[in-house]
Length: 518
Image 1 (cartoon, rainbow, N blue to C red):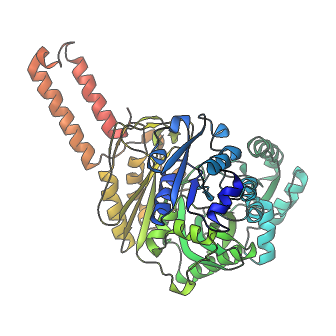
Image 2 (image 1 turned 90 degrees about the vertical axis):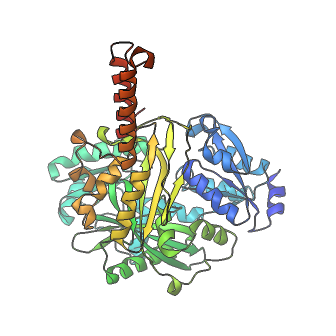
Image 3 (image 1 turned 120 degrees about the vertical axis):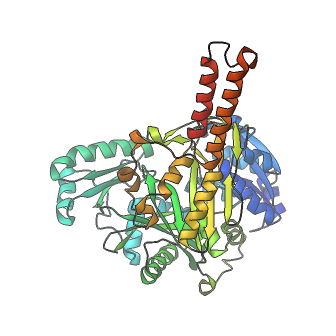
């Protein structure tokens, strides 16, 4: 179908079929939300994702290339061509990949399709840390003290640091994911740190622009969900606490934040709305803040897309954010009033990743040999995997997200412990035991944890995951099976090599139950 025919079929600002330009759990989540609205869905997949869950649950699925994301999920032309070929009127980018790529947004709209997300102009302003800092300064939103221009001369950087006080943070203007950042604690370290940070930024982002800002020691990471109509109207859906991180990547999130008083919550949420209005934001977005120990907060960045952790906001507000994105993209407006929104109860999200906590959270791959998911009131699982699925090495290690809700934080933590304990996942090494560990740490239980929680509290060298009840039962069953085979003798197959084979099998079963290793 040509782009003109696709646009005529959907009508201006309307559509009945959507291509989801993503993979994994977020693609499945979006497909489910679109289906609830009566919209048909098209998935895209790379060669190793041929049997991925998102490709199986969509109404249609289109192959877009080989394993490398640069040859499949990041090729705008293939995504747009797939949308035209299947008669889609819109594209939902999810998160990651091309979701915050202004050129892709423009290409989608120039092709006669609706982009379910913000405008390219908003992405360009907020996607560059220097331009977003300048915009926030002009709008009156608090920003961390520092520069609003690129710095390349060590002498200039030292002069700035002397003025705002050490330690300072060197940050890549185009950075993200924890790359292109270095802490500098003295003038003597500035030249080498600036050189290294510029080099890393140039290699990672194609842009070596660096700026200097005050480094906030032991902060908390608070973000606010916003919705904008694209015409200057905006509301907030309250905050999320995202301070449990490893290498600047979030692991556990919760809403409300245990760190905010009602007055501080109101001020941070109002600053987020002010941010969205400043760029006439359209759709769902998240404004991120650093919260200092003294209670001061500062604008960090804006994510111009749906966040990984959006489900906890849905849990405490009752608002479906995918539905809201679609309504706004259709030109129907936000459809919600700020005064009608409330936070009800408490929600926690745990990112279930194929990674090994004992090896500095190194990625893991393999087949999902066995999987038993938790159920019950207040338990939600967003997932892109199933039993028998081969987890590829080519993409983000996120497998699923476990979301729990309860009437208050203590009951939410208790429910989370129960749900995590019932979650059985054998195959790739995973971080479910880490989450159980985190729930038992005093700093997490009392809500005082900061962004340094993992690096200061978690010792990978002494990592001994606590077994869940299900895994204890698996170990007992494995031991019983081994003993039965041992008593049966050679006919039972456990003593054919003097018993070593049976013992080895039992040890393998125990190891898998404890760690998720294959």
